Image (cartoon, rainbow, N blue to C red; front, side):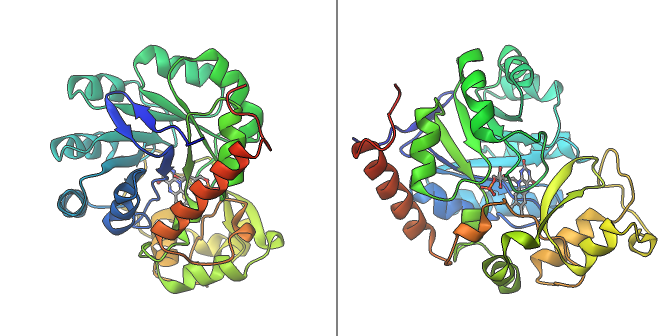
Amino acid sequence: MNLPGLKIGDRFVDLPIIQGGMAVSVSTAELSCAVADEGGIGVIGATGLSIEELKRQLQEARAMTKGILGLNIMVAARSFKEVVYESLRQKVDVIIAGAGFSKDVFGICKEWKTPLITMVSSVKAAKLAERLGAAAVIVEGRDAGGHLGTEAKTEDLLPAICKAVSIPAIAAGGFVDGKAISRVMALGAAGVQMGTRFLLSSECTVHDNFKELLLKSKISDLVRILSPVGLPANAIKTPLVEKLLAGDQSIRPDKCNGCLKHCSGSFCILDALKRARNGDYERGLFFTGSNFPAIKKILSVKEIIGDLMEEARACMNGGEVPVNP
Ligand SMILES: Cc1cc2nc3c(=O)[nH]c(=O)nc-3n(C[C@H](O)[C@H](O)[C@H](O)COP(=O)(O)O)c2cc1C
């Protein structure tokens, strides 16, 4: 049995895989095009990019692939609407709104006839998203990279959300192999969004220090922080994180460019994510999904997707997990 493709509004991809958008130049044109070329949805993370940089990346990506490209933007970002409009002008295929909920974006995407996917972590939010016109929801649990909206595991949230909505529900959070894909699809998911597995790919353009840190860290190095956005997140314990957890005031920024709608000011998350991207262990904030220790190697996107599909198919055909029972 082959895996079904994924239909988001009027867009269709051969594989039920979305590469999670990762802020501050972690998922750039190179990574998203590689995923789109393999038949999944490649997603550029827009948060932390200037409008000029975003435009450049979207144009570059469009020229590089004929596949389906998405754009992820955090609702919590002050430039949220500006980014959405610029992405629509650049003819992105799908918009994905994470870290917060914006009612306005539904109307904007409808007007531009572009499918909108929202990140949810409850039945209530999923039903609201469907009612407002979302083409799909991404159900993200506590094991995900990036900002978290719940303490529940994705697999515990999925069945009730799949039952409550008739739009596709895509599972995210801690999934790194094909077994997980077959498991969540058996629970009713239409596909899987993966971030950390694609961060650890050759096409991801973050500094090698970021990738090496994830490869050598253990689960005991993972901590839960409270981001200045006001949401928890999984991160590797680095000197900056230790200071944050200890309530050290010296990490508070002395200048601010107001990138977030609301910011606690405990530290500058934009600078910290930029430093992580550039490989600065001392002063960087390294976001990761909690299942990073299961990833042993940096592989090309082609190899990652080949392995994922082969393993998912084997699980489904071997009867280890029932498919759409
Ligand atoms: C470094 C990093 C940055 C992320 N940035 C964003 C973001 O800007 N917006 C968003 O909606 N999700 C963001 N995420 C979440 C991913 O899109 C994805 O949903 C998540 O990583 C899934 O969990 P996994 O990493 O265990 O696969 C980020 C994740 C990571 C690891």
